[in-house]
Image (cartoon, rainbow, N blue to C red; front, top):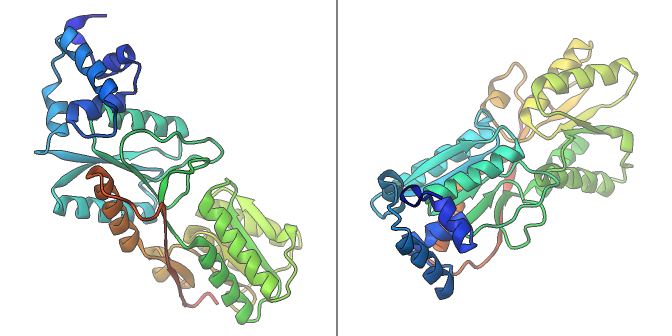
Length: 330
């Protein structure tokens, strides 16, 4: 090991702690034991560690940084959240690093480590992981939108996806639909699971059987939804209502139904989820579930700043209400 080029990672290895812990000791940002602090400081002194000036600047109060990990920055819903977060943090004297993972859990893990090494004081985390557990680090972290698997102590801010699924399905039922399919993300993401459970509750309340054949799992996206619906109609599947768990899938459903010679909403009624721009301005404006992005972002900012300043957090899970937006697809 070259002493003159010692890195934070190497200090962490020598001390037997995480990179995040070394960063916190160097930043004097609490959440570590006196024994750990002394061990890290002794190694820094022994090897005459000189921090990188740029990284040091990021760790000081003159340039407080928050990391934002997002699974798909091209997704309008996530882009809106990031924009709100960035603006809110800027107003409070913080800058942000935005890390796009493309729904890749390995990239997600790498970004988390990189943010820790850069000395960010907090992380807002939209996890793309499904069945893989998340180990909570020592950097103040707030999860937004998706609940991480097996992270029982995580602080999570999410929309009321269960209620959203219920409202969407009930709207279809109230408008005369008897045979309602749900088109959802095939991954076991908490948001999608909760939307399905809301769908199921609405059907059960209306004494409509929940048919396994009406639960269609697919890859999220316009093209996949369109081709899936076209295929189901060709195969003779009968339905009069569709709850698509994203607006892009809802748009694919609508175009697939029309291409198959059926009418929206006379033959098939459709409800989406997210209330992104396309849902309002497409040829047949889509009835959808609106998520309160502003409230989600501001609550995340409040939580992360409370954690950074060692303030008590009253709740580990904040559920933000959703609402139904009625348009022409139903």
